[in-house]
Length: 185
Image 1 (cartoon, rainbow, N blue to C red):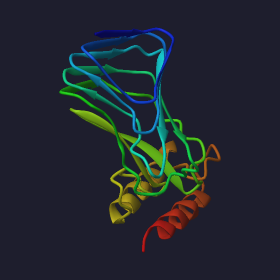
Image 2 (cartoon, rainbow, N blue to C red):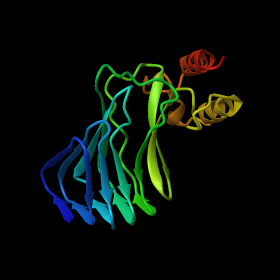
Image 3 (cartoon, rainbow, N blue to C red):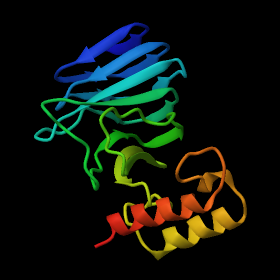
């Protein structure tokens, strides 16, 4: 069976298809659900994937035997009282090869000291919940993050606007250091 989605598809359990073309609309994956695609998966930029995450369940996931062409938005919704915590690192999509990328993930309810990062590699995409001070997006907060931040701040790069005021100021350094010390043991 081939799957061609233009509206919304809600998966509450597993579904296996031979190939998939997603043009617009949304794929909603409940916790524990899994979309298995036997061939290629293609997703247009107007499409979004919603993944329900529960503290007691594996988040929804897309598993593709062939290649995956991805774009569009990725939204995570906590269910059953789930709140993202530092170190959460669920796989979202796996494939023989991944081309493209999702836009910045939307995660309602994430605490102010954390950020969500999509980690992409040639065969998959996973979500990483990490400290705002994790500038290297490695899942660890260490000296390399401080070096990156200070180099970026002293070079005048707005990526170092850590307090999000719109300009670089000494307050950015103190805000970064507060987040860094809060995240390190």
